[in-house]
Length: 110
Image (cartoon, rainbow, N blue to C red; front, top):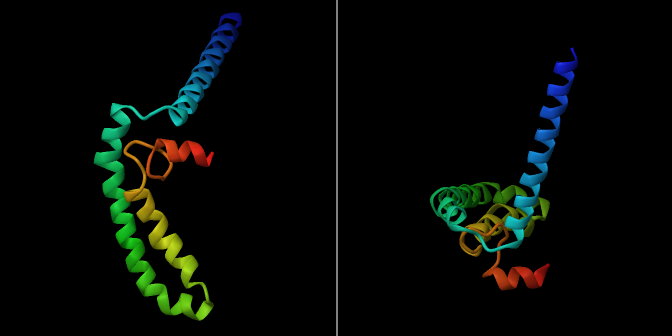
């Protein structure tokens, strides 16, 4: 029984240290320039998906236009359905996690 408790405590300690290290790496990734894998993943996976989301959002905006016009929130619907996904697709730098024209502009906005 004592061995089971020691093993469980050791496993819990290892899991906590791994999660702390992962959180530190994630935070440093947020602050530093994106690396090779982040850029490739963004180019191959994220950008095509965001382009599809932008196209679906534009179609949804056109379909919802009579209802949003009646409700008086055409600008909000356009911003949320078309502009924000479009900005994430075309304005965000390759591999970055926030939209903007480049890393310097993002740092100035913080």
